[in-house]
Image (cartoon, rainbow, N blue to C red; front, side, top):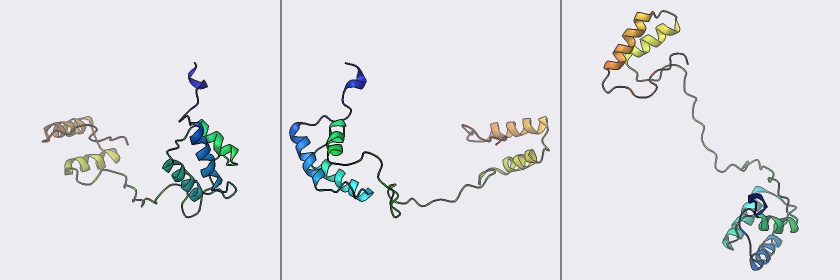
Length: 140
Protein backbone atom coordinates (compact mmCIF):
# COMPACT_ATOMS: atom_id res chain seq x y z
CA UNK A 1 0.00 0.00 0.00
CA UNK A 2 1.50 3.39 -0.90
CA UNK A 3 2.57 5.44 2.05
CA UNK A 4 0.29 8.38 1.27
CA UNK A 5 -2.89 6.29 1.05
CA UNK A 6 -2.85 5.30 4.74
CA UNK A 7 -4.66 7.55 7.21
CA UNK A 8 -2.29 9.89 9.00
CA UNK A 9 -2.21 9.94 12.78
CA UNK A 10 -4.26 7.84 15.15
CA UNK A 11 -6.95 5.55 13.78
CA UNK A 12 -9.97 5.75 16.07
CA UNK A 13 -12.27 2.93 17.01
CA UNK A 14 -16.02 3.33 16.58
CA UNK A 15 -16.33 3.96 20.33
CA UNK A 16 -13.62 6.63 20.22
CA UNK A 17 -15.31 8.34 17.25
CA UNK A 18 -18.60 8.39 19.18
CA UNK A 19 -16.88 9.77 22.28
CA UNK A 20 -15.08 12.42 20.18
CA UNK A 21 -18.42 13.46 18.66
CA UNK A 22 -19.92 13.75 22.17
CA UNK A 23 -17.01 15.89 23.34
CA UNK A 24 -17.20 18.09 20.23
CA UNK A 25 -20.94 18.61 20.85
CA UNK A 26 -20.06 20.31 24.15
CA UNK A 27 -18.30 23.10 22.24
CA UNK A 28 -19.72 25.69 19.86
CA UNK A 29 -17.78 25.67 16.57
CA UNK A 30 -19.00 29.22 15.82
CA UNK A 31 -17.12 30.67 18.81
CA UNK A 32 -13.70 29.62 17.56
CA UNK A 33 -10.90 30.87 19.80
CA UNK A 34 -7.52 29.74 21.04
CA UNK A 35 -8.93 29.12 24.51
CA UNK A 36 -11.87 27.05 23.19
CA UNK A 37 -9.52 24.93 21.06
CA UNK A 38 -7.27 24.30 24.04
CA UNK A 39 -10.25 23.18 26.11
CA UNK A 40 -11.40 20.89 23.29
CA UNK A 41 -7.90 19.47 22.89
CA UNK A 42 -7.60 18.84 26.64
CA UNK A 43 -10.99 17.10 26.74
CA UNK A 44 -10.03 14.86 23.81
CA UNK A 45 -6.67 14.04 25.42
CA UNK A 46 -8.38 13.18 28.70
CA UNK A 47 -10.54 10.70 26.76
CA UNK A 48 -7.34 9.27 25.19
CA UNK A 49 -8.38 10.39 21.71
CA UNK A 50 -5.33 11.24 19.65
CA UNK A 51 -5.12 13.50 16.58
CA UNK A 52 -5.37 12.03 13.12
CA UNK A 53 -7.52 11.88 10.00
CA UNK A 54 -10.35 10.13 11.86
CA UNK A 55 -10.56 12.87 14.48
CA UNK A 56 -10.32 15.52 11.77
CA UNK A 57 -13.35 13.99 10.03
CA UNK A 58 -15.33 13.81 13.30
CA UNK A 59 -14.62 17.48 14.02
CA UNK A 60 -15.51 18.53 10.46
CA UNK A 61 -18.82 16.69 10.78
CA UNK A 62 -19.43 18.58 14.05
CA UNK A 63 -19.02 21.88 12.19
CA UNK A 64 -15.46 22.79 13.15
CA UNK A 65 -13.23 24.40 10.57
CA UNK A 66 -9.76 22.96 10.34
CA UNK A 67 -8.07 26.32 9.78
CA UNK A 68 -5.94 28.01 12.41
CA UNK A 69 -7.94 29.78 15.13
CA UNK A 70 -8.02 33.57 15.24
CA UNK A 71 -5.24 35.12 17.30
CA UNK A 72 -6.32 36.75 20.50
CA UNK A 73 -4.81 40.04 21.58
CA UNK A 74 -3.84 38.76 25.00
CA UNK A 75 -2.36 35.46 23.87
CA UNK A 76 -1.47 35.53 20.17
CA UNK A 77 -1.50 31.73 20.40
CA UNK A 78 2.23 31.68 21.14
CA UNK A 79 2.29 30.74 24.81
CA UNK A 80 3.83 32.81 27.59
CA UNK A 81 5.59 35.96 26.55
CA UNK A 82 9.36 35.62 26.56
CA UNK A 83 11.25 38.71 27.71
CA UNK A 84 13.35 40.16 24.93
CA UNK A 85 17.00 40.68 25.60
CA UNK A 86 19.04 43.55 24.35
CA UNK A 87 20.75 42.91 21.01
CA UNK A 88 24.48 42.26 21.29
CA UNK A 89 26.59 45.23 20.33
CA UNK A 90 28.65 44.75 17.20
CA UNK A 91 32.40 44.45 17.47
CA UNK A 92 34.68 42.31 19.56
CA UNK A 93 33.01 40.71 22.56
CA UNK A 94 34.08 41.90 25.99
CA UNK A 95 36.87 40.06 27.76
CA UNK A 96 39.23 39.54 24.82
CA UNK A 97 42.95 40.06 25.38
CA UNK A 98 44.15 43.60 24.64
CA UNK A 99 46.22 42.51 21.64
CA UNK A 100 43.07 41.10 19.97
CA UNK A 101 41.03 44.25 20.52
CA UNK A 102 43.91 46.41 19.32
CA UNK A 103 44.38 44.28 16.18
CA UNK A 104 40.67 44.39 15.34
CA UNK A 105 40.55 48.16 15.70
CA UNK A 106 43.67 48.59 13.52
CA UNK A 107 42.18 46.20 10.93
CA UNK A 108 38.95 48.22 10.79
CA UNK A 109 41.02 51.35 10.16
CA UNK A 110 42.96 49.58 7.37
CA UNK A 111 46.27 49.84 9.23
CA UNK A 112 47.26 46.14 9.28
CA UNK A 113 50.17 44.81 7.23
CA UNK A 114 50.97 41.19 6.41
CA UNK A 115 53.64 41.20 9.08
CA UNK A 116 51.08 42.49 11.66
CA UNK A 117 48.75 39.64 10.71
CA UNK A 118 51.56 37.08 11.11
CA UNK A 119 52.51 38.48 14.51
CA UNK A 120 48.87 38.40 15.57
CA UNK A 121 48.51 34.74 14.57
CA UNK A 122 51.73 33.86 16.42
CA UNK A 123 50.35 35.47 19.60
CA UNK A 124 47.09 33.54 19.19
CA UNK A 125 48.97 30.24 18.78
CA UNK A 126 50.95 30.93 21.98
CA UNK A 127 47.84 31.55 24.06
CA UNK A 128 47.14 29.05 26.81
CA UNK A 129 44.75 27.36 26.48
CA UNK A 130 44.83 27.43 22.70
CA UNK A 131 41.60 28.97 21.36
CA UNK A 132 39.30 26.50 19.61
CA UNK A 133 36.76 27.09 16.86
CA UNK A 134 36.36 30.45 15.21
CA UNK A 135 38.38 32.80 17.33
CA UNK A 136 38.01 36.01 15.36
CA UNK A 137 36.13 36.56 12.13
CA UNK A 138 37.89 39.72 11.08
CA UNK A 139 35.73 40.23 8.00
CA UNK A 140 32.42 40.24 9.91
